Image 1: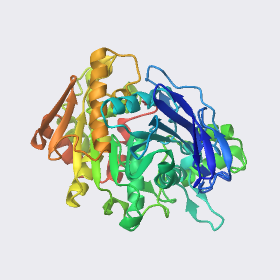
Image 2 (image 1 turned 135 degrees about the horizontal axis):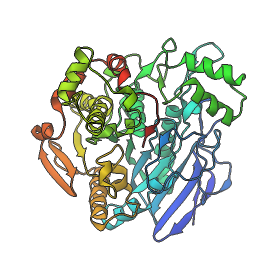
Image 3 (image 1 turned 180 degrees about the vertical axis):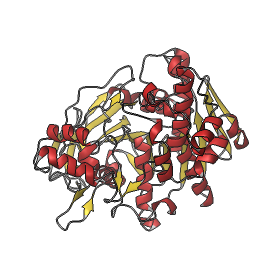
Image 4 (image 1 turned 90 degrees about the horizontal axis):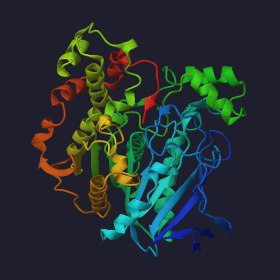
Length: 486
């Protein structure tokens, strides 16, 4: 099947199967050279495009232990062709609400075409539920290609290439999704982990624009804010030393191969894609006034599982200062704990410190601006391996419903998809003044006063008393070398 667009001046040939139509690898921008601003494509020069094959992903190393059953898929990579997106829609879609997803992966890895992100079951169930949606998954630059700060011709340091790609993709969607049957006035954008952090970054970016120019209105933020990642300046350790280190290893940083750049970034210590404080962000980004209209804010009780390999016996902490003693008290940690108990409690601490603290901070900011927030605690355990608990990103199993798992877990997935499609349709997924608690195959609607029954409120209040920079210094010794874990 195909879409021929007069306004885009192009024809896009996709796949049609079982009531679903998919267009893969639609380029939304050109990247003329390494570390160039993405140039949005609005005219396809009367071309005919094969959108039946997966688009390119950004070159990447896999700095994570991959725990998804289906594993990482072998992907075609190209740093100049990765600015593409995939549209999945019901057959014959017209004027449907749009759900855009930004994948996670620490801004270092991941792609929307991997087997665990297949949106077809989600779109199929949206039809059954009577709330059909058009889904868009975007690709963007990662690793050094997307998040290395580099000097421009005037000697000014610029970066945030991946974030700029994401925003360019959203602009393309806002302008052109109507050609594929989407309603540009009903766009919801969501992300998990680094995808959620990226969405927060885009919201901060839009705070500098007049509200009538903003394109981000309805958002789903799942386990990720800019709070602990933040932005840096070129004088800080996160940027210039890494740039200098890579340059020393590869020589000409602009013309070395993609593989050489990836190898050098590892040796130089680029282990997350950080944001640079450049013209993409306002100077006082922590105190902006957001322009969004509706927010669904979610986290997982053991969001710290992606630190599990970095919490190892070699860095078992003995309390040395007031901060350490308070953390040990708040999380009931003892020097006599077994390794298993210590490890679990430390993952709870890292989840609170890295993810849930940021959600609490954002919720307060939204409430101060009278922006409605639907607060969710997604504490449903892993569908196939209970020993993995309610780990970071566990909600994706139920959101995509694309794995082999027991039927009762598929039922949970379908109900969770119902929750999300209601939000995408502008409906209340639950009363906004209530708390949504997902656990043990149940969806409970509780008073917000019960939040403390499921999250460590005294610990969160304590952690909110420190700046992100202070926490960064105080918690360095709590994690060591090792891969992050998805």
